[in-house]
Length: 302
Image (cartoon, rainbow, N blue to C red):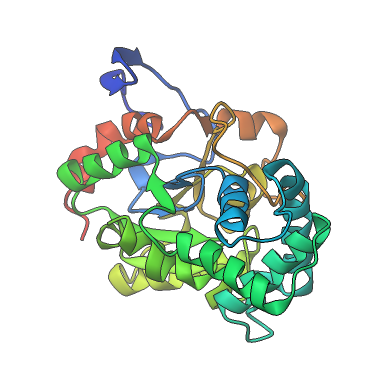
């Protein structure tokens, strides 16, 4: 049976609402799943406040002359982010840049594109404030549906192998996940800066498969379900690598922004707009519903 019964009543928002979801895409076969692979930002974590508010507030704190506003910073940051990943892909992996070095270049470019030019002392004071924020507990928080889903997996499917496959710098998996208390839930951690390949590239999914095989040596790609909010990076990338995939539709949440909207999704067998639509779910609670029929099996995998 490709899709188990999953009409459950779950807590959501202000009350108990019935949920039903049918996924008919060939991307999803719950009876074969042995592991879950997660994107991080926009899937599990969210910035606690808008990124450009943090940048603008840091300018005021650092007493920059004429600090740039949120409105000025927003388009500047998007351009600087794209330039940074183009010039130094995977957060400077090939160039040997640290996360901090890559971000310092990108933030400086953001300020320049916002029409400001500060001396080194002014900028260093400003940048440290920004960088400290994202290395503190105030920088990120778990999305509500992610917290509920991960609590459910701990309680109901303790044998289910879970890991991270993320287009992030190393600091995200080594610092941010521990800060929000989520690192103990995962067995493998793959990020683009570590492997030098970003989603939707095949290499980053191959790296996740290799790490998953430390825990389950005979696991096959189609036995891993990848979950993420990017149609190109997460859904198409995972499918092309032979993983199962479900796409989280975060479009209703204004806090979730996809900055890498220039990425092109690779081809995979059966790729079509309809297939992607059929493989899309509203949130991780819907994924929980879809996996509910496999609880007994999933609890005994490891």
